Amino acid sequence: MHPKILFFDTTLRDGEQSPGVSLNLKQKLEIAKALVELGVNVIEAGFPITSPGDFESVKTLAKEIKGVTIAGLARANPKDIEVAWEALKYAESPRIHTFIATSDIHLKYKLKKSREEVLEITESAVKYALKFCPDVEFSAEDATRSDWNYLFQVVLTAVKSGAKTINIPDTVGYTVPQEYFNLISFLIENLKKEGYENALKEGKLRISVHCHNDLGLAVANSLSAILAGATQIEGTINGIGERAGNASLEEIIMTLKTRSNFFKERLGYPLEININTKKIVPVSQLVSKYTGMIIQPNKAIVGANAFSHEAGIHQHGVICERSTYEIISPEEVGWTGSAIVLGKHSGRHAIGFKLKSRGWTLEDEVLTEIFEIYKNEVKDVLRNIADEHLEGILIDKFLEKEYRFYLLSSQVISVYGSSLKPFAQVEIEDRKEGRKVSIGIGVGPIDAAYKAVASALGYSFEREPDKKFIRLIDFHIDALSGGTSAEGISDVIIEDETGIRTAGLGRDGDIVIASLKAFLRALNRLEAFKEKGVELKAKKLAFKD
Ligand code: KIV
Ligand code: ZN
Image (cartoon, rainbow, N blue to C red; front, side):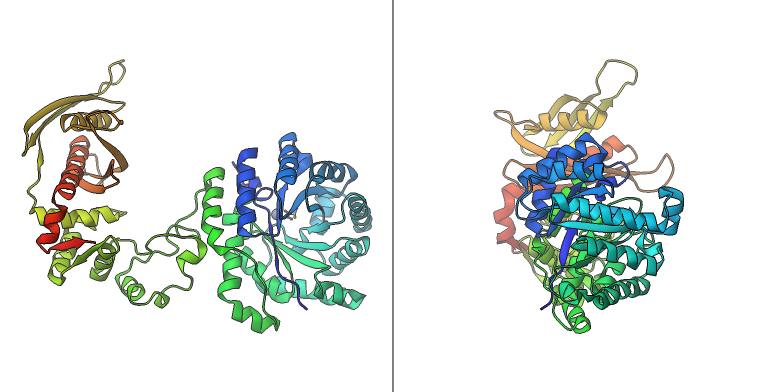
């Protein structure tokens, strides 16, 4: 018999200790619910003694979150433990997590206590916590910088006092995988010698690991500890936490899943992991949204680029057979949509693939033409190339650039230091209905100009009777080179009331004009798409299924 690995999530406690992060109760509840759906075993809800807010959060989570153990942190003293229990006592499965430092540095400078005193405190704290709660976890803070023999004495004291989980934190992210492996092995071997072999095997006693990422090794160290026999892994979603953060739970989970054979071979038995990996990306995005901690695009598993292939050779490979460049399928961790992103290095295959995934099947020579236009006109000027830009090239080709709307003139006035609002007037040639003139007032010159165009052509950014509703989905303005006289490039995506999205690019030395050109191009494509989709099919340039 071998115990399954338990996942202990401390996003709401250690994660919330990230600089600048403060979650409110509603957000904590929502994250906790998402963690339950993910399937973690323990949620550390907070550190109740630290503030009334933390106390209330732990108490509310203890009352409302079911199907998981709720832990609360407490220093190794009676008051902390009592307050933690006051908050935790409502939980279906409560756990008091008590800790004290064991390294000489912490003993000397922070605790100002002798090794003997810390041993006594360990014993009395664990025993006191057990009076309230049968599930007690003990952490030896700064374990990895502690003297190993002394650390073992503390661990043994905690075990003998009744702690069921012994956590060995790498509090300052100092250890390296081989050293941590050796430390965890040393502790486990010694516990076995003391007669705890069966308890460890049956999961009645667990060695837990809790790694910080100061040297970027938190995940590697945690995995190493699993190989040494640790059966509880602590970490946070997206790896958030103090300083460089904690071990990213999602990375550990996906490594154990993806390389399950390796772990099975090394451990001699398969690891049982009951995690719904499809919930990883949703919970990651929720944590990012509420903490305000942006996920770096190249972050493993949950970064926006984690499954994006930009290089032509990679894109070709993935289109032919995903496993050429992908070790996990994006859907497995909850990503939806295509993994191919268009960029500087995208090749003809990727362009064809993208258009196909949007319903366009192209004849070979049309694809070649589209690719040439993409290469010459789009790829060097846009950093992020949305699918709508590609589709736009196709529509332009069909139209032979015979657009419906042309900007004849525009005037935009924006005054600083006055109560007058920015004002715009535009004059547009509508090839169907003749010349149109209108004005717009906005919060800025571009807002005013866009409102003027919309009003001239019968569109509105608000839902209004007799107007065609239009929404601005994306808008960027960038400089094409350095210097104040650089040409501006504007990139716009709009959507009509039926959900059709089109994009437009506009270039000009005047950024308002560049923005107007981009908007009109997107509107021209929208009109063409709506009116001439059938003809597009008939001409056999392309067809949309
Ligand atoms: O990093 C650490 O040592 C901790 C303990 C309180 C578990 O967060
Ligand atoms: Zn920590």
